[in-house]
Length: 97
Image (tube, rainbow, N blue to C red; front, side, top):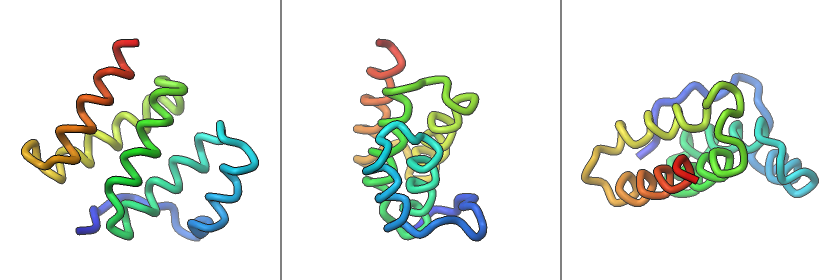
C-alpha cells in the first residue's frame, strides 16, 4: 500500500539519494526526500526507519518535519498496524532522550 505523500516533483531518484547519504550520513534533507520516495513506492517500513533516524539525530530539523510525516504515516496505517505500534514506541523513546 503506497501512502499519499507530497514527494517533491523532479526530485532525485532513490539510488542518487542513497549515494548522497553514503557521502554524508547527516544529510537530513536527502534522508527526508528518500523517505518520501519510499512511501510513494509502498516501502513504509524503510521510510519509517529513515524518518526515525532523522528524529533521533536532530529532533528539531526543519521544524520537526520528520516527526510530523511519521505521525501522518502512522495515522494512515492505523493504530493497530504493527509498523505503527513499533514506530510509535521508537519515536517516543527518541523524543524522551
